[in-house]
Image (cartoon, rainbow, N blue to C red; front, side, top):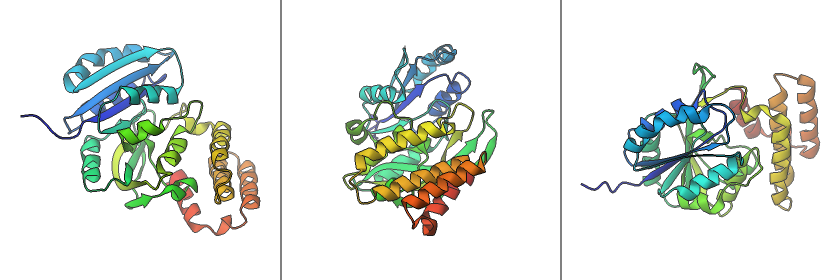
Length: 293
């Protein structure tokens, strides 16, 4: 009997994650949903990531409807993701970092959510189990079910766990990722929601998000510069100043545990940019949940 359920694509860009990528691939193999295609692209790793991935090729070719593994010179994560999207044929797609892990019901649960939604939902997210480099649980982030619109993401009110995301493939491919951005997900999300689409966050735990010293989230200044560059596209938006202030608040929280004086400086800059910021309870709650829960 022909399986008429939707085909789901998974794109894994890999860069110097030899210690983690096998677990990522295995978690896709272990999904309880059958119709999956997988593409893994090594983005010029200087470690032995390619050697780690190679033994998984046979298992992937047997498990998935389509599978491809490419290894080439470094071009950056955005270019790699766009290459993966171009390869895909599914109705839905899950971009997956090569250090994170899917829980076994991730794909099936998100497809069920999409089936119950109308076409305004461009992406479905969930909660995450935060783990360390060795796979030990640090904390769990499960949030109440909610819908996010453009303004929510623009003003940093949204909690969007990147590894938990599933998108409609054609919508994401039409937007793509902008090369050269450290926070390429934020740019993509704003573009995807600009025409009135929404994201659904079910809050249900769907993935394990790994924290380690190679995470982009440690690159505080690069994140700041990238965020400012993204906001340049929205300089004429009536919420531009508020959005800029909230990026400054994010910087404050990045520094709060390591350099309290620098954190205070960022808060002062944010307050000068938006004097109403200290009274924005939604922002402070979201920031607390993102950085401390």
